[in-house]
Image (cartoon, rainbow, N blue to C red):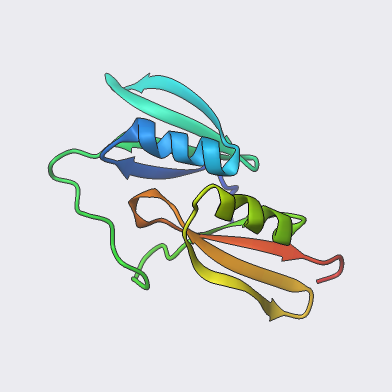
Length: 128
């Protein structure tokens, strides 16, 4: 079987600058601006993952409401979840689930990003 590795997440936004700024300001993403196929694209690096943001056009459907089929959310690991949550709340980030213990040694919560993106924040204790 082929060996697959993760490469990127691709988002579409009606305002690529605002979406990129949200990820930069709220989550510390590194932002680059490039041209792709003659159109502006935002390239973000966050936690070792590349997030590409292209401009949504008039034919792009609105974002779904959770829960929905398809991609449900993506998760970001963090050490010091309580401190991260306090910082994000101070920045006005909306939470859709407060911190809860998903299983022994793993605590999670969920935030809502631009375009209704659901993002899980999780903290794993060693051995969990």
